[in-house]
Length: 455
Image 1: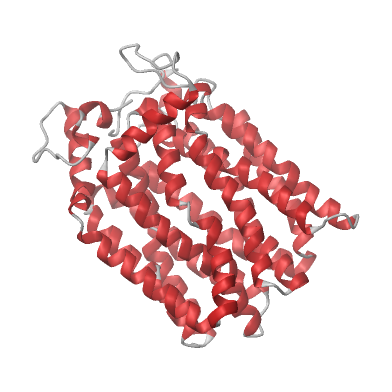
Image 2: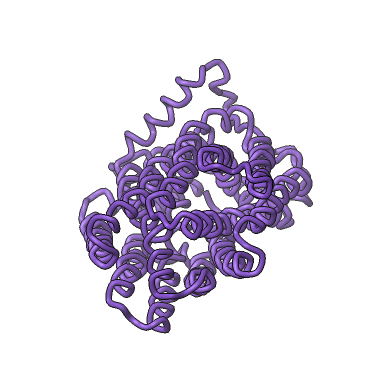
């Protein structure tokens, strides 16, 4: 997929294709909905931690939110491919706003028991998974309509997510400090509802419809499980996609353990308040936005493999180790800021690789399954961190997490399939121009013109 690729809807108005409206509208929806999600990741754990004092219960709430998120994100791909990502996106955003609104209302009425809270949090997670996936699936189409290179579009999408990750923690810290964690849920519900409205009102009507192959072939006659099996077949048959998903499953588990439990416990134990979590998240997010902007501008000219693993090297383990070392707050802020700069390059690279290596008609299935596998450890991260802190203490848990992070992100890159990160991009460019690639890859479907050609 390259700049100037034809839009997925040949009948769309030519003037519309020359504007940035499709991409801007999509990024706006991503921004507000992701901001709501980031606020909730601080407001809800802080509420549970301060009211119960239990790291285990804090991790349990995170588990009940993220397990449905991961499961439904992986299973919703065939539905999104069949009915179109636009409809799924605005519907799921609206659904997720309802339980976010009910949580503070039930708390005010004295009816918010732990089982009720867990059930409502699970509904939020179940709706957020398909809703987030649907927006990711529309990024390549938005890039084509706006005639923007794929890596620039994924870079801008990553920048938007990082910006939300910057605004969200800072806003959460201020909101929790000023109005309390439960009242912050009203803001979260408003963000979800706004994301639904933006998708419904601003995107061109032809955008986000089910994709059909140019030759007219389709899989409308296939059932749900057959469609899901096709997605599994693509992922299973591509060593690079499978390796990316498995590696990030480990790092995401460690990130979840760190953010959901280890960091709040460290902040509380050090005598700080939720505003410090907001400060650290903002420091990390500001530099991550910078990294994503750089990726959007020049990532299509950079060696992916080198950037990917260097980014992980500075974004992962140092955060664990600086807290374990008992460093002063200014040093912790500096490490978080440096880590954000490296992390800003990661998601644009991953997103571009998935789009290049998956047939467009199967994109939601493949992207959903890769994301679901990559996120599979997140629901258990908080629970595992709570158990580790209770068993061996905070500092040993932080050191262990940092070592596991460093080992995972350094040894993985030695496997041969990772060389395909850059070859896939060359194959995609060659397919778009009708030229043979300089060194045809043999390690996955990226060398197949159908998997790499524009849609």
